[in-house]
Amino acid sequence: MSLVITRRRSAAAVLSAALLVSLAACGSDSKKDSGSKSTGATVTKADLTVLAASSLTDVFKTAGAAYEKEHPGVKVKFSFAGSQELAAQVKQGAPADALVTADTKTMDGLTSDTGTPTVIAKNRLVIAVGKGNPEKVASLKDLADTKLKVVLAAPEVPVGKYSKKVLDAQKITVKPVSQEPNVRAVLSKVELGEADAGLVYKTDASTATDKVDAITIPDAQNAVASYPAATLKTSKHADAAAAFVKWLSTPEAQKILQDAGFQQP
Image (cartoon, rainbow, N blue to C red; front, top):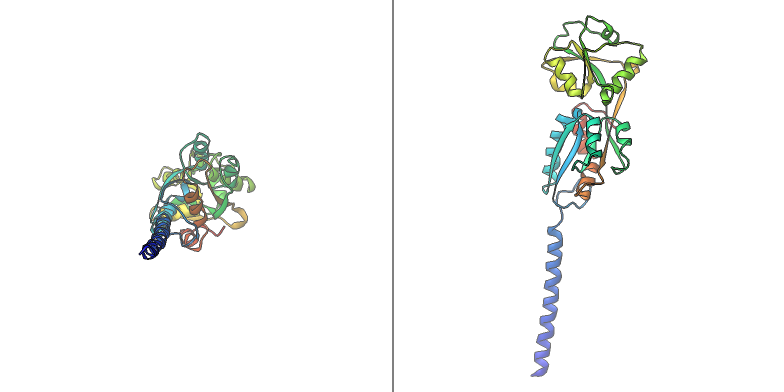
């Protein structure tokens, strides 16, 4: 009788141990984000805040929706502004998880605040003019006409720096009627008819084809804008932020960027 009881107790112990192992495995799996196909990373649920350059406004809304669909546990909120404004926010300790700027110089100035950056896209400048090009602007040299109302981004803004670079290289002097805090503000001035022309990114002009035309600037006279992305060291969701930044270089994300007119990094 004692031997039978002992055997029964042993069998029960084995069964209990097996059940505990099974439950532990299930519990572990439930904490994983099942939507990490592109990066192969295991990401916990998180609400991410991404600081991004103004020129990424439209494309990142599309990219964010695609990312959330693929990663059900993650929500992505974007805060768009000029890269110089974003840099100031980072230095002031604004709560965010990742940063994407429209130039490498701004990102390089934040090495103590970010992880290692990766360039995810490139862009070029165009001359934005009113629909139908009423002032018949044909090239950069036309912007020197003092009768033309030209608007540029401020020199501390990436697109403003690129604009100055291409104009200086062609020895063209432009006296803008205003200098704006970001590329979308420049585009808006042209859209509203408050300016005859402005230098913007190709991708920004493509978002307003019903109100503006884009005059191509030859590659030899143009500047290439690079967009680096990096995690922020103050992020409370380090793994999720790293997964999102990594995803931006995947074929899916690159297709979204290139469909919007951005160039390969």
